[in-house]
Length: 452
Image (tube, rainbow, N blue to C red; front, side, top):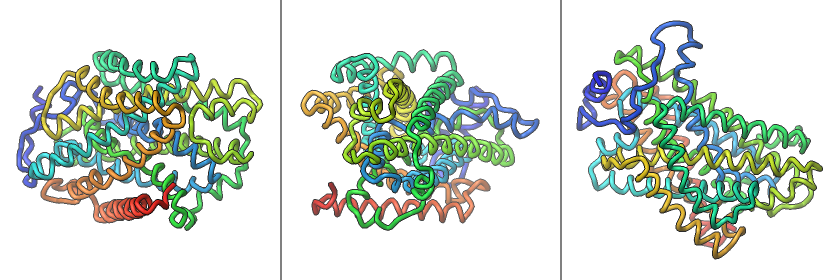
């Protein structure tokens, strides 16, 4: 309790309040770190939050956009996967810096720095982003259950609400168990895709060329729409809130030197995890390009179609099962991180403390209603369109999370000696500008009917 009090009372001149109750207070500062010893031992204590963040960069909504992009445009959008991953590494490093240096997550920082006329709309936008994330996870998990066990989509959507009990059980065991669960499922996903890529045998020369940028991404409205969907699925708004909160589960010292080391270790953790996420994201797109685009199936977006087409195209009956296992693992992983992000956003912006089960059921209900309506009314095609649209909604909301993050970490009054270096702030500002410009163009194309 003393450690908790010391972290929440340390005054920083730029903030309006010196004392803030931390979000995720039940796990705040519960993971011990090593103040001395070799670098790798110190790093081991910090490994974990980055992988919770990485989950948000490979959720079922990402699968839909990557599969659609790979089947329609081959390897061309690999450059977007790489670009969005670089953006993610930079922005998540700022999140770790904010959480450790100020003792505030991004939601708390917004509430503490802005008047209610600003912070409350930001809260609403953050909740919309989490709902969009939840919709993608609900549909993805339901499709995984359908592919593996034949459970109807409508019933699968309702079953996803039960994951609240899994999350509560893991949190009661300790936060390290939550992280271990995430890492285990990420390993399952990696193995599944590794086998499928080996079976697909892609043209590696074309894969390498796919990472080179092309102007067609901007000039082709349909390609831009999918590119923005990939960015929205990769640099996810809720991850910015999540990382700035979960990084505070580590128990680090109060001195500037100790906090600076904690920032460096947390940044290494998130960078390693996000490089792993890039590997998975690229694998999804490469699989689609090497199988569907190669044989002229350029309209693949439905995850069910991927499952049914993989066996004849790869010549292996195990390929569809591997895809289903990876998808279900992905959905389960995403439900855990979305729950934590939702708790951080609600507690941080409005200081409402709901029991974990109540918070989870509330967010699940908001996501399940549109997902259930779409699956019942429109069927498989509707779920695919909703998945892609949810990712574009995330991309449109991104500036409202990125701009405050860059502002806070660049403010010496708020961050003290741990303010972000100018070159980092400049790079992050460029990232924000790129996303805003692309979103404006997307909206123009959408209004004029140019986007598909």
